[in-house]
Image 1 (tube, rainbow, N blue to C red):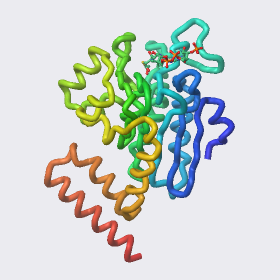
Image 2 (image 1 turned 60 degrees about the vertical axis):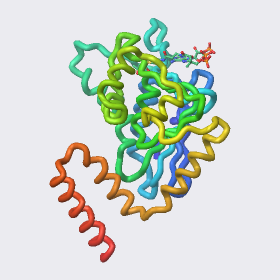
Image 3 (image 1 turned 30 degrees about the vertical axis):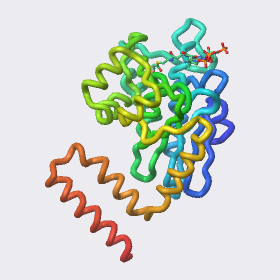
Amino acid sequence: MPELAELADIGLDLRVQDSVATVTLNRPGRRNAMTPSLWLGLAEVGRALPEQVRIVVVRGAGPSFCAGIDLRLFTAEGVPGEDFRLDPADDGFDEILASWQAGFTWLRDPRFVSIAAVQGHALGAGFQLALACDLRVLADNAKLCMKEPALGLVPDLTGTKPLVEIVGLPRATELCLTARTVAAAEALELRLAEVVVPEAELEAAVGDLVAALLGTDPAAARATKALLAQARANTLEQQAAAERKAQRSLLAARQR
Ligand code: CAA
């Protein structure tokens, strides 16, 4: 596991209790604005999670889930200790960006179900982090915005695929190209939230969901998540074959 003190230095807090890991973005004074070090740290957390973890809760400390990238990175002063050179002429451009994206993609791992608990703002990279999770529980004061195009950037932290898959291409186009803010009630309508609850009940609502998810068989839950994840790309025949294969492995593992 990554050293907790090192995680704290980059604004992350990780708690693992039995089969539940809670990852907290922990720079509330900056509304949990993110840096490249934090994205690399998230990827490290994903790599190091113990095998018993079945649920990953991603939350933000303070009034906002996450205000997106730390905007000081775009200034001449930058952020102390952060190396934020993204030169399109650099041979390493792709590799650097991929290493940042890895801070988001691990949340889709079939080993566990990831839940974003979102209060207040989830902007830009923060919205993409919520989209990287399997499920989203929103407080009624949540505000989601894909702000990148307004800043002259594309959303590049793996958020475009889940956004299109959840809300459909026309709505995703409208949301990204206007960079407008979606409030919690609309997010629920657009299925960007599984549930919306009063802010004071966010933690309890996430706890209830975690308890319900832990109620199913761990091996079956993992295999089912893996199956569901490939359903969209598969034909019916391919998916039926995948179901047979998954069932066989599950039953065989149980016989051992
Ligand atoms: N980067 C750096 N600092 C930030 C920040 C950010 N993204 N968001 C907030 N902060 C800082 C503020 O500068 C402020 O610092 P001081 O106390 O030193 O003045 C502190 O956090 C609190 O901020 P506010 O007083 O503004 O808090 P608020 O609750 O009134 O408003 C907010 C919250 C709506 C998130 C507002 O702070 C805001 O609009 N922040 C900027 C959001 C933004 O544009 N993010 C970029 C998204 S695009 C992206 O993420 C691109 C990408 O991936 C490459």
